[in-house]
Length: 247
Ligand code: PEP
Image 1 (cartoon, rainbow, N blue to C red):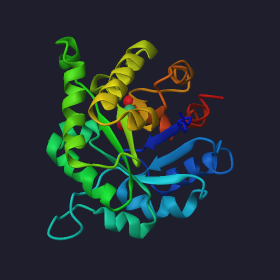
Image 2: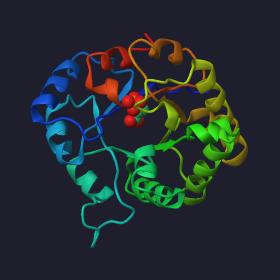
Image 3: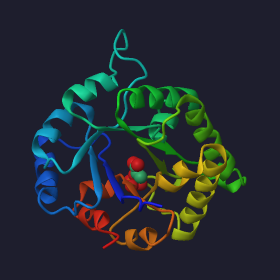
């Protein structure tokens, strides 16, 4: 089995301006371990600016995009537009899109399919809410969200799955390495039985939810954790430590 390349994404959410981006870019350019696939996801109005500033060994991701190429969808952007800007990755199904903006499993799956058809790498986010975990529904919720994606796509080679328990996002409550590993392992088993052994072995399953410079190394030791999707800490100097978590 080929080793899975460690993957670290920084989700800047709706934060920053050109001056703040300059500071982040200066920290990252020239100091990043290129054996890690590192991706920065600025707000969409700064995609072009960020792309023009970051070293070409670092990738730029959108935080969202829509499920069709063009048309009367005010406020949205399409994979074709991202490709036109040279953007290679897109985050889809983030819990804030699902729970603040009400995106359904089906909409997220349709977006994944359309982004993949346009040759973008998709960071597909899934994860349970606290009440779902407490009700013993963690696996069922993650499988339900992933099943919608499975039914919409056929090629998983450009998919990275981000397991992001909603209760851990932006809360300072990280899943323990054992809790995260348990879910990642379940997801890999599910992929082996429902998709293929090859996909299960090769796909990156990354963890997101209050990852910091302090907790990243212990999480990165787990065999089924192939990297991180990082919110708050991706704006800070410790993002470099998170990228280097496996060193
Ligand atoms: C995220 O936005 O995907 C995220 C994981 O945020 P945070 O690291 O701040 O919890």
